[in-house]
Length: 130
Image (cartoon, rainbow, N blue to C red; front, side, top):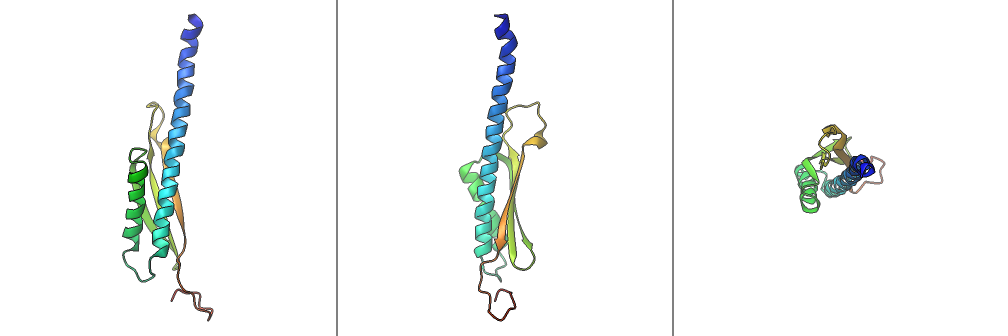
């Protein structure tokens, strides 16, 4: 009986840590999938499209809400550019916290995806989308 009383808190703590790690990992997977989908929309939008940021962010947030609406709290998507020909989407949020005593920053999830804009590049060497 004494052994059970001594071991039970340790077993419970280890079990909760395993569950917490699994929820953090699953939240990270959802964020990565949302960033990929947002980046796919951003990269496929025309170069002169002015609304690609809103479309990419909306697609990323739609995926977060469809796949894991409670897995990432305070989820947000941000579309950015790097140079003239690259578009990126960053999704961040906080994974579900099972153990209340651990710091909340430990469960912050951030995923980023993007790449070059998909467009016709002329053979004249200009390298710009046209």
